[in-house]
Amino acid sequence: MSSPSRALLLDAGFASLPFLDVLRQHGYRTAVCGSKTQDPGHRFADDSSPVNYGDVQQVIDLCREWGISALLPGVTDVSYLAGSRVAEQLGFSGFDTPDVADTLFQKDQFRQWAQANHFPVPAAVQQLSESNELSLPLIVKPVDAYSGLGITHISEREQLAVAFLAAQQASRSGEALIEQFINGTLHSHSAFIRNGEIVCEFYVDEFCTVYPWQVNSSSLTTQLSRTLQDRVSDCLATLTSQLGLCDGLLHTQFMTDGNDFWLIELTRRCPGDLYSRLISLSTGVPYSSHFVAPFINIDDHFDQRRPVRQRFIARHTVSVAEATRFAGFHFAALPAKILDVIPLKLPGDALEAAPRDRAGLVFAECDSLTRLAQLTPHLNQYLNPPMQQERKS
Image (cartoon, rainbow, N blue to C red; front, side, top):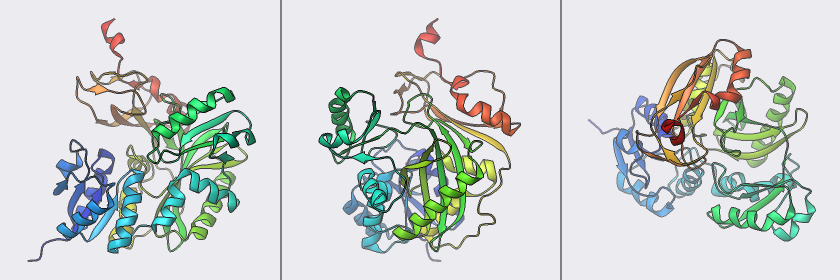
C-alpha cells in the first residue's frame, strides 16, 4: 500500500490549524515548519520541523528531503512570499510568481503600481524629503511589517523624523512609507478567484479598539451599501485581471468615507485570528476548504457570489493595552451567546500589549442584525481579561 502524499504548511500558528484539517480530509499526510516550536501546529501536524519558513533555501531543502507534493502558506505575509519563491523553483501550484506577490504584499511597490494604474489608494511618498507633497494628517508605516507594528499617526511635521525612524526599525527591509491619513471606516473584502474571475466574496466591518492599527473586533458588514460593495468588487476584479492573479484568495483591507474608498493593504494569504471561522459561522461557506483547494489542485464549487448571512456572528480578539500576566478571561454580561472561546495563554503567562500579543479569541452570536451592528464595535467592553491592578483591588 502506497503512503499518502505529504503537504507542507509554512506556518505552525493556531490560525493555520484549520488548513491541516482540510488537508487530512483530502488524504494528505500533514507537515508544518516554523521556528516557533511552541506553536500548536507542531503538535497537531503528522510531521514538523523547526526550519524557519522565511528561509527559502531551507524550505526547498526540506521539501526535497520529505518528498513534499503540495505547499501551502499560513496566515503570515512571509509564508506566502517565501512560498511563492519555493513554488517557482519546485513547481507547486497555488502561488503567484514572486514579482506579482511582491507587487501586492510590499506596501511601497503596491502604492507605486496602483497609482500608475489609477487604482484608489492614499497618496504616498517614500522619502522624508518628499513629505511636504502631502497635507497633514499623515500615517507613517513600514513597507512590510504586520499587525500594525511601527505605525504612527502624524499631526505635526516635527513628528515625522522620529516616526519615520520607528517605521524603518519595524521593517524587515528597513524601508518606510508616508501616506495621507484617510478618515473613514475600515473594512475587508475577501474574494476567491477562479480562472481570473472573482467567484465568491465577503465584506467584513473591522474595528480597532485596543491598538489603533490592529483589528480586534469584526462581523460581516452591516454598514456598506450594495452600491459601494459593487464598486469595490469591480475595482478588485480589474486588479485581478491586470496582475494576472492565479486561482486563490485575494484579501483586501480598504477604507471608505461612505462615498469614496481607498485600498489599504492586499494579500493572498489567509487573514489571521480565525477570520476563516467568522465567515464559515456567518454563512456556512467552508472558507478554509476554498482557501486550500488551489494549492492541492482540487476543483471546488461556489453556489453564490455573495453568500447570504445565515447567522449574526461577531469575532473578537482578546488583547490588552498594557503588558500584564494572564489570569483568565473576564466576560461581562453580554447581550449575545458565546459560541467559542479559543485560549492562547495559560494562567500566569506573560501577556504583552497589543499588537504584539493576544490572550484568545471569542466568537459570539447575536439575535438580530441590529444587535450585531450595535455590539461588534464595543466587544472590547465585554470580552477582556482583567488587568493586574483590577485583580488587586
